[in-house]
Length: 178
Image (cartoon, rainbow, N blue to C red; front, side, top):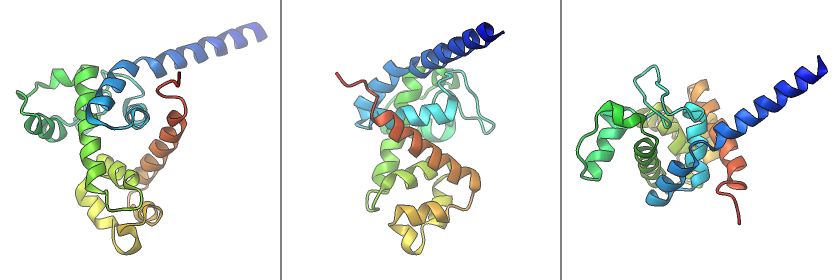
């Protein structure tokens, strides 16, 4: 019985490690293309889809970074002067991470005047700009710690904290230092 438990644990650990690195190539390419830290893109992919390129969200989000076709994908194709995409293209890890990295870069720039644009950008990614505008009053307008406490949706607050925590984890190991 102990042998089965150990064997099962080893198999699960191996499967987790394989899944965790399954999308490294498209993540690295998209991050380099849009000058976003690969660890951040990977942390968002981890939280949004757990590295499953076929993932679909309840609100119509698609793929690794849970891109909304009529919002972020359209904004990306317009900004990059690309032919509009069908929804099926967003299941492609390369296309999806390019659109997602572009969107993250856009959001990080939007909140550049804050002490740390990351929580603002992540809240915007998760809950939308209109909600961020509701939460960034007083000290929370520029102080990221105050902003996190002002986030009015518990799910979004957990989202921001979990992506930031995973981002810190990946920063030291992704991409692998040579």
